[in-house]
Length: 83
Image 1: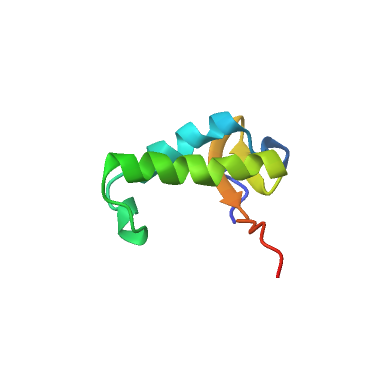
Image 2 (image 1 turned 90 degrees about the horizontal axis):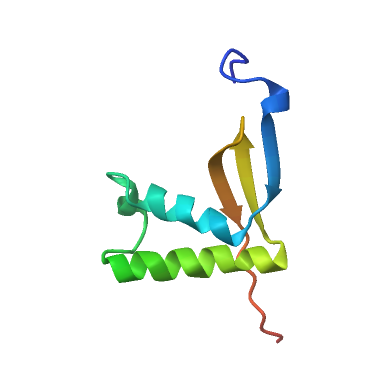
């Protein structure tokens, strides 16, 4: 990546917080994004965001920031089942 865009010290990765769900929901409403997800209705989007961001309580979701602006969220979906 070209270092002209931002400085390394401006990048920060932290555990996600429940408030980060608002950014996921905003991104899902951007044109064309839902083509990659099986979501159609507003209710489905809200449920999916709630499901994804709730993994933050298990510290299995990370949020990336550049200069304090959230630019990405990565979530590991944990399945609590024991075989």
